[in-house]
Length: 396
Image (cartoon, rainbow, N blue to C red; front, side, top):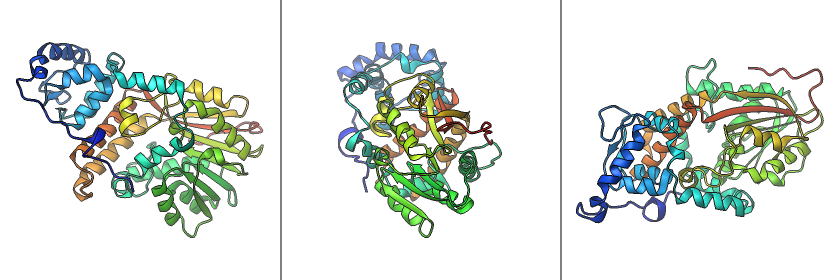
């Protein structure tokens, strides 16, 4: 199992220089510039409102102005600043679009890398599994609730996280029109909960693929005794027939260079009367990379698709039957995950130290902010190879 390295590299703790150092002397004009930017979002330095930013280290200003969002997130991890309502602070900064005003070397590197290499191909496709999903099932069990479902819940009639996750799984099954005996493919099956749900509630048999060894091992144990096969496999390797195909929270790791290949794979696996559901986070503007802090610490080589990118990649292969956006439900899901993990930190192993805890807290609160200000969406897209005769009616 891969564990966070907290003594070297990007997780290493940084120590402040003496107050008389050049950094401290130069902080005053940088502080004024930093404060002016925050004022555009109605955020104050060391103010008394819960969303105001509390400065713990004056080196913060130079770091953020030089390195943008990467330095801002790292400075929080290092304890250089705090906010009582972190999600509200970050939402204000995003709403004011300050993330676009201050960019650092991390943005330039990701832009260059996107033009030179396919970051999600070959062994790089497994990196997110090794870096994120293999962190440890203890962390995810503490955060995700009764079912290990690491994607947006559906809160339309749900009162709690477990009910919202079951409602989401059932919604996918109903959109696919699952029937007993159908053979189903889950691309990016996680810990196996979706296939288990479909097999138990709808009588299907299936195959789940993942790039995480930890997830694969857990899913095999979870689905023992059910007609389910779990594979450690890249989606590009698939070439076999299924009645239905779905993907929940995996497409964010595919990358724009591979979108067409993803849909070509799904098309060759489906019969003419098949259906596929794509459940993915999406963004309002097409891009070829992610935020540099997210890339370094949370989801390496990830990126969010846009409507235009999904449409272009699936054009000529599928008929678009339905496009459902319930992205505001992700804010509520993330709040539930935040509450769960904050209550459970004292029960987790010591390897999840304070810097890791601050990293994870920042990740969850930044994600809440993205969905709250509607910069990120959650889509369920239903596609058919040749169109449903008479038309498709999507359940809600």
